[in-house]
Image (tube, rainbow, N blue to C red):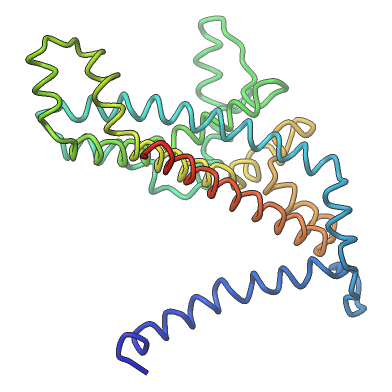
Length: 282
């Protein structure tokens, strides 16, 4: 065994124990009829568990809710993050302090953020609804029609700094010659941004959007801490529904099958994104 292999062996062992074994055990459970409430040994169920998962309308409803959440959150984070990154790029004073303040929400655990906004936006006790009420505006942030958007905005508050971090790094690494040429030609700021900045920055934007989309797709903490999927099933995301099936309903085998289907869908999304990215670069 070479020195390189000896150095990689501990890492591979830890990776196999932390990722490989749980994944393999989840795949095994997805082909059984295992339930938490049953004392009997799990029996082989074949593809029946996958069939019941695919035929479950609540599964597809939760998946649709998750997609809607991801689109709202990631689009808002991209637009706001780009605006903040452009402003920070031009900043000359107290740059480090400003960046540290803007990045601070990213370091708070999502469950703590969910609990914080659960009280801040509470329609009876929350500070923001009280302030809005003084000017005649009454909003139930977690009521019907508003809950999913409120959850998305909470995600925007916490994870826009991540988008800012990536976009700002990309902006600061851009070559200066195209911008100098555009300035000599008398191009406006908007034209320069649209025709020069965005095309050159597109690889960074693509990576940022894919990373945030994957992270938004597994949202769980906000839903668990604030709405528990309500009102009704308006905020029942796929991760929360899998948790509910596996833990609340004790159907671990079906939850494992749903997780495996979700993993395949996410891997397919990644492959499609990178193929589109390669085509755009050729």
